[in-house]
Length: 255
Length: 221
Image (cartoon, rainbow over the protein chains, first blue to last red):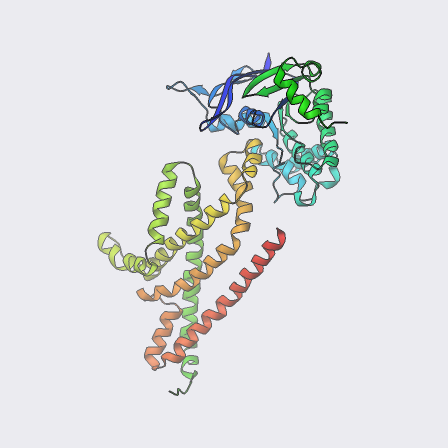
């Protein structure tokens, strides 16, 4: 059974149709890299999956259970506490980190455990310390985000998401805001998570990383899946013209 | 015109001024707590998406911002008891007027402060599974209050000065006592000068504190 199933997902911002009836199935342990030009709907897709944006239409199933219910007028409506439960199961890492600047690194990682899970402070601290150690930041626990580098901030953000034991991890361009020399440390952490067999969706422009780490690659265009397949199929032997053009523009200045 | 300054008649009434200062501090404390906490509720209402919160909060802010506090105090003291079957003390009437007015002004400070927090902070909080209230309490407000502190301190200074309006309903505070001393001793120059000086002594450190706050906040950025 799939962990996540999306059917006919559509999202419109006013007159702007960003997603137009997108279908997607994610099985346990899959790692899906999502590629696409800017404006193709990659980020919006991720943000709809944990309801940071409310889908205009379509169905999202988690563990075989459809989320929300049909209203009389035929559209799906969601209760706020159902969505907060879904967000606990679907972790998200953002391009801009979105760390809480008034809390230390360990405070950031503990926050979900304390406020959402209501875990006792000592237990939450132990757990948070373990997550920081996992991303290689055990010694930065008491630093405030302002005193961390971009790569360190993003690793704290990953630890913060991991602390909630998510069944699915969403990465929204996690290295796009980083200086080039800091990209590697963040990709290294994501790679380690991949090797643990975690299920993840990753929007990225790092084609090499996608090739090595993803089990499947999806190319989005015009708010729908344009091409999908193994990394070899999509990145090395794309069938569709637009996928080829996208890859060519990316490779133009590669070594 | 020459005036022979003589503060002896003021010093002879030190006890009356102390009673007045106590009255001023009491109404200040009441209005500060009531005004700023009610202002938070109204400010959250102004920020909320639900029209059931937004519309009443907006009506409240517009009404109390656009009517003079003195008129409100006089209305609560003289008009309300005719309409409602209970008496109201000068302290209650004045506190009500000043608190509601301060709530309206501070509500706009809270709303502005909350709106100034980047959307990414909401994203980060909600992605962990926090509800609106949890995100507001744990993530948004602590950051917003820091930015609002200089404006809120200015509000506190305004409340302190507005407390003199309570003398209009004969509440015993500094100005009321000054008036009393002036009329009993025929020394309005000394009496009102003394009242002004006492207010200055209270308020000057508070104003200095806002300067320090503003400088510190700038340094953190």
